[in-house]
Image (cartoon, rainbow, N blue to C red):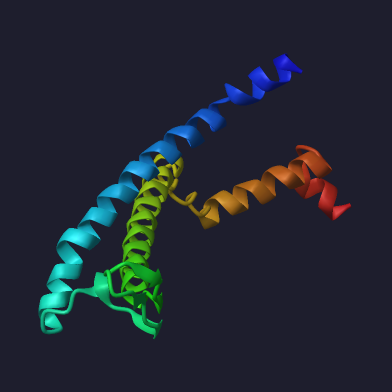
Length: 149
């Protein structure tokens, strides 16, 4: 069983996948930072200073006692965070799509050999010579005499 596991774990595809997952995680952090630190503030400025991370729909407000302690948490739908996550996902999806498209284009260029030129069409003289040679092989060297008989 250990040999099977070793064979599986150290196969090239598994190691490639592990590297891809690690790089994908790091890439996800970069895209999240781009969304949170660049895109959302710009989008907030365009929408009149709205901070999307604080947008929510409160279904029941929090209850606070006289001492200022929270008795009951508020129940809210955080749709602003959802909007940020959707934009985050879309940027990651677009980036991955473009990367895969670039890689497949590079693979096609490597794999596709240059097209060979089409073979030249035989001339009339070549065709007649071929017919003559076929007749000689069929009827012998003295074709004219054989045909007349």
